[in-house]
Structure formats: C-alpha cells, structure tokens
Image (cartoon, rainbow, N blue to C red; front, side, top):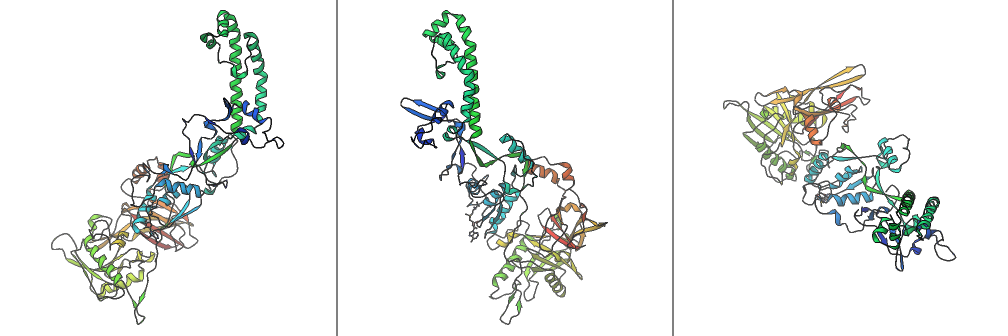
Length: 615
Ligand SMILES: C[S@@+](CC[C@H](N)C(=O)[O-])C[C@H]1O[C@@H](n2cnc3c(N)ncnc32)[C@H](O)[C@@H]1O
C-alpha cells in the first residue's frame, strides 16, 4: 500500500446504522493522561462535552460515535461478501474458474498499481483480468491450451474502467477537489506506480477530538454571543436554563401547559419578546456545532479506500498489448543411431521412437481430409476427394486430390502435402526442400501445413511450376488427439503473400497495402485480392528481427468496422481519429535505424502473415 500500511481492508457500514454509543471507560481511551493523577488532562473531558460527544445515562458516561466518523469497518478473515450473484463477472467459462472478487481482494491487499503479478495456474485468466483492470502488470502460465485460449479471449474482449491516475492532470485536479487545496503543479508523466486517486473516509477517533484544542477556541468565541442571549431569556422568563435545557421554541411550553406555558399564554408580549432571542440563540448554537464538527473532520486522519478509485466514466479502456509465449519455439532435430538427422514428423510406418510425431502427421492428414483448406473467400476453399499417406519420402507425407474447377469433367489435381512440426516453426529452407520434392514427384501443387512460418517463408510462393500454398494450422489442432474430427472450424487456412508497395519521400517512407495473393483452386492461378479481404494491418517501422512491435495500426475491412467497434465498446469513437486508422496507406515515418521494417497483415479469420523489407 502506498503508505506502507497494514493489510487492512475497509468495507462500508450500512448508512442506516444510527450513531453508535460506545460504552467504554472514556478516561482509559484518552491517552496523554496526567502522569501524577493518572486522570485525563483537565481540559480534555470538557472538550468532549463541548463537542457534544458525551452521552450520559444514569451512572454511565459514554462516547458518542457518529456514523460519519468512520463509515467503514476493517475486513476480517471471513469473506462472506465474495460469493453469490455474478461472482464470475458473467457466465462461468471454465469449470474450475475462481470468483473475481476473491482474486481482486487478494490483489488489492497485496500489490500496488504497476506491480507485477504472477499466476502460474492461469485457468480462464481471472488473475490476469483483475490485474489488467487494476493497473498491475501480469504474467500467467498454464499447461492447457484450452485455458490459455479462454484467457486470451477474455482479457482481449473485456472493457475496463478508466481510473484517474494520481500522476495526471485530471488526477491532480481531483485530489485538489477532495482535499480542498490548490491543485499541485508539478509535471505529470502518467506513471502507474503513483497509483490512482482514491475515495477516502474520515477516521475520527475519541482521541483526535479530545486533543483538538481548536474546539475550545470555537466554543469560547460562540459563547460571547450565546451567553448574553441565555441570560436575557432566563431574566425575562424567570427561569434558570442551562444550555442543554433551552427548548427549541416556546409554543411547546404553551401546548404542554407547564407553569411557564401558562405564564406565556397570559402574557403574549412576553412570548413576542423572547421568541427572537430564542431563535437567535439556536442559530448560534447550530453554527457553533457545525464549526466544531468541521474542525473535528479537518483534524482527523482519513483512510484510503483502495478498491474505490475515482473513475472517468466518459472513457473506457481495453487491454494493453501482451504477448503469448510457448515452449519450444524452435524446431528440434532428431538423430538416429548412426547420428543421421531424422525428420521426425514425416510419415512412416513401424514403431520407431518418433511414433508420436508420426501419429501427429497422420492425425493432421485425417483432419485435413475432413476440413479441407480454407481461404479468405469461401469460393476458394480447397476440398479434397481423397487424402492419403505418402510414405518413404523426406518432406512430403501425404497426397491430396481435388478437382480444378466445378464441372464433373474438371481435371483432378494432385497436391503434395507437407506437415510441419507439432511444436515449432517452418522455415523457408523447409519449404524449398518440400517444393523441390513435390516437383520431382510430379505433384501439381505443394500444400504446406504448419502452426508457424518464419518471416522469410512468406515471400516463397512458387518453385518452378509448383505453387507453394502455405496453410496455417489452427491452434485447436494441438488438441487433435482429444477432439473429434468434425471438419468444423477453419483448421487449415491459406493466407497468401501480401501485396505491398513502399514509397520513399525524402527521408520518409509510406507503406501501401494493395491486397493479398489468393490461390484459385478453380484455375490453379494465384491472383491478388483487394484490401477489403484484410481486417487490419500493422507496421513495425523499425523491426529488430526478433519481435514485432506494433508502431502503426490500421483497420480496413468491408463490414463497417467503425460500427462494430462502436457496438462492442458501447462508446462513441472520435470519427476523425478513426479516419486516420481506417486506411490502406500508412502515415509517413522516418527510415528505420535497424534498416528493416516489417508489415503484418491479418484477415477476417484472424490469420496473419508478416513480411520484412530492407530499407
Ligand atoms: C483451478 S484452475 C485455475 C483457475 C483460475 N484461477 C480461473 O479463475 O480460471 C488450475 C489451472 O492450473 C493448470 N495447471 C495444472 N497444473 C499445472 C502446471 N503444472 N503448470 C501450470 N498450470 C497448471 C490447469 O490446467 C488449470 O487450468
């Protein structure tokens, strides 16, 4: 916690709770006792009386604690409020999902904004979701791809509240408004580690009242006006009222027919004389109490409510950028007993140590047969009449037959199928070798299927007469051992080479995306589609050859993405800002210091391809 305080969490009292009368020995509660007598200092008890904080019953004096003094109570270890309705923040999406409130409370008690939270058992990503909401950085891990896929969709699809940062101009202004002080003027940087601007509650204690000498000053100042009025009233009415005996008005005396009431009834001029004095006295009495109460509040400490930051309700937030990493990003090489490299993922028969990988290739062929190969447009889908194993070769492990064209007389074509590793990336040399093999074996086309291709393979589209189709395998296929082969879902998707034009203007560059090449199974040609097949595209204007950093983002798409975004975010989107993102030509940017830029293109099916340019 920012103040280095203890892990105390406060929850609100019910505002209907009446003022509390605390029956404890006041003397014991007043610290700072007189060392000689062991009693509280002489001035402190009268001060509590003056503040109207002593409640007396026969034989007892108690401290009157008001609701507003501390309208919360510390949380105990019994968290009954964390379960119940909507504890998952919507429908439960994972069978062993944890309630949001529990994770949130733990996170808020144990971390500050900007801290790093690690949850090694991610599940549906509750911890990451909560961390994202509350400005904590996070890392989460799971062995299950199902869990990771759910968590990714959950984090990316959520809308988060926009909390006011302490280190922002709005935050400075809000803080000034709450504390009734002049706004701070130091420069702001939007650092998360400075936290948010939180709601807070006063924490008025008996001790803080008893030690507040200002109460005496206020009280004595008002006495100079109250006492003459009380004396005038007592003299005129023949009473000896002490301050606490003075009635609100004289008519009640008349109604109750007391001795004084009878006197006032018989002498209306006495009533007219005293009524303004009485009114005056009460006005001063109320003003005195208000001033004392304000002084008590001002001098009291306050407690921050760390789960109640102020929010800018006009803004919504979406998740910040994050990456997903998996083990084994590199292709592994297996060797046999003679130290010869063995391609573990090609099909062969028999029970070698590589059976698991071979099982994987067989399984992929089975799925390929059922699902076919999808392209951005449905009419370009490749449907196989047969897919069979093709053993005995180095790269090609299957043969797929399909007809070129729609009529029954259309010629049957043979595709050589290369399946990439279960874990790892297919590189350009792999593709070159597979394409060469496909040519030698008389195939019409090579279809490579892989989870990932390296950046250089995106440019490799043809070897001699053999078109090279690169199908990206859906991550669901990692679970193919466990899932039914129904042919549903876009399991194998071809995403062609993006057609990109670079322009240099002085020392600046612009990138234009003209479309993506598409294989037409009807004709066997590769043609360029327009930019409407592209959902979004990104530019890393200074690519370091390791990780793609989105420095420019643009959104195309034919399905009115502006409207969809508005509906999804349930928010107004600045049309001008949107216009600058909805384009096929990038804003100009300076030449990269690394000498390279990278362009990543994503289609409506969520498939992506990346191309690197030396500039
Ligand atoms: C109880 S769930 C976590 C639920 C999560 N808090 C949520 O809200 O959805 C436990 C998770 O731990 C994962 N898991 C089990 N053993 C693991 C291991 N050795 N390493 C990482 N994750 C593991 C499981 O796959 C499962 O998703």
